[in-house]
Length: 438
Image (cartoon, rainbow, N blue to C red; front, side, top):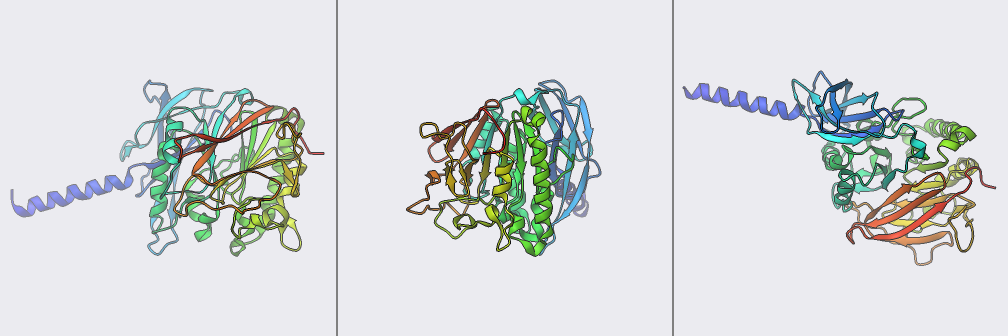
């Protein structure tokens, strides 16, 4: 065989191999559908494929079923204008509380590895799910990630709430840092639903990397809205929203009012007696806290936080009064690279249930700031003299684990990644009655 022929064959083989790499599914992650019998599977290819499919089956059996979706072209706003293809397949008609194995891709271009997930029970209000909750996890120094991988694949957690700030940053290096982060979380997110809200580190190019890469389905509208959405899980109604609308008004300010109206409508619906009987806990997650005790100049350190009190001077669209009015039970925040638990608080005043049992029938929402999953910016220090509403402050890498036992009991634990999963803080919130605060 002549040298020229060998070179031609070599280059054809290399080109084919490179093409296959570019169309292989990667960055696989799950999110909840609109009803318990649905699961959204999202993944990325670096090249175009004309089919987006998920093959799945029960337990260890064959992947007998197939669901078909679509892909969208995403062009990053960086100098190279890199193009990615985001694939979404909504798998429907799933059996309740069943273990499914699945992979994604297509016959022509190849399939992902086989992953698995477990569906919700049909009557999910009687279910006691366990969720990992954290924010501010990057590619570098993601100290909580090995523990989260173990928890997800061993079945110790049922879902994740990632409360903003991913990768540091998703748009960096023409969005290749975003690609690497999504690969990094795949050993968690391909096994349990990875539910998210947006943070300030996602702001470049009008939050386009965040908006395009995730698939948060709002259970009421049945549409994807990665900025604000809600879903039911066990005895809880969970609301994700954007605090960043208040700070990046260069992208427009009408969205502040749109989100506020949506929040009030969603809270009204969740607070109806028939709905609260099924899902009594109302839980919110937003990135920037209303309150914090960190030694910096972030919004939560000011007496009149914008998230808490609304836009300056006019005090429009403040969230504390809205959440208090509809009896929100628990509010998760991140942004500060630390862990802080507050006493039940409203308008900077403490409303403990009693001296002996502050979290039994509290008179105001409980706030948790959990932003220490680990990133390149390290940990944030605290002030020397915290306000009376601050109960516990911990500078340590880790994440929060929430167990929704039933309609009256909810346990929160703060696990340390530095101390091999040691529990550094633990409380149980007990509420005999859910609803507006007196």
